[in-house]
Amino acid sequence: MKKGFIAIIAVIAVIAIIGFLVGPGFYNTSIDLQENATSQWANVESSYQRRADLIPNIVNTAKGYAQFEQETLTKVIEARSKATSITIDPSNITPEQLMQFQQVQSGLTSALSRLLAVFEQYPDLKANENFKELINELERTENRINVERNRFNETVKPFNKHIKKFPNNFINMFIGKFSEMDYFEADQGTSEAPKVEFDFSN
Image (cartoon, rainbow, N blue to C red):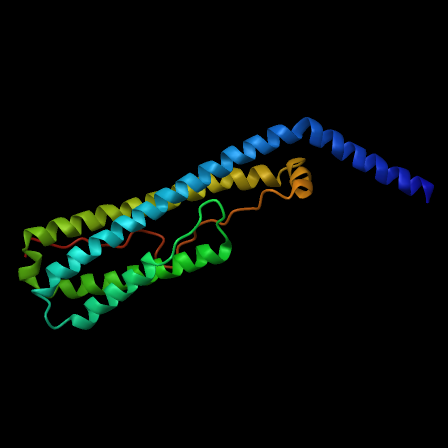
């Protein structure tokens, strides 16, 4: 009994020494890595917002041509509304929040894909210079979204590795400050930027 008590005290003493020697460095590095990830998340949201900002112009340009596709246009507008209603605190990203964000953004991606497929049936719309520029900008924005999502995952990885390594994991267990961050995992079929190119030669 006495030996067991001594062993427990020894373990606590070792952890205390490790915490004293490593703790400040662990804490400061964790803060830096966490800040990198949360800052990058802001870039992800900014890219998605840029896409949302383009949609009203695309829809308004299409209305004059795609008069019989009002249901498709309405679905895009509704999906945009859902996507822009979700905001996430970058300093406290939870798995549930990230999943909800991904779902509404994927819904908007699907609605846009259907809309762009319909546009192929309207050669006059494809010849519209304003429409061409909007589609080109949408393509650039979709590519930017993909880049920023990947960069976010790249900044999350070193943070997660840092807090899980020994002895950091023991220190973190006692201070209870840092939690592993989730990666942005695109839904199946949306891991790459959707194809929004048109053949404007027709």
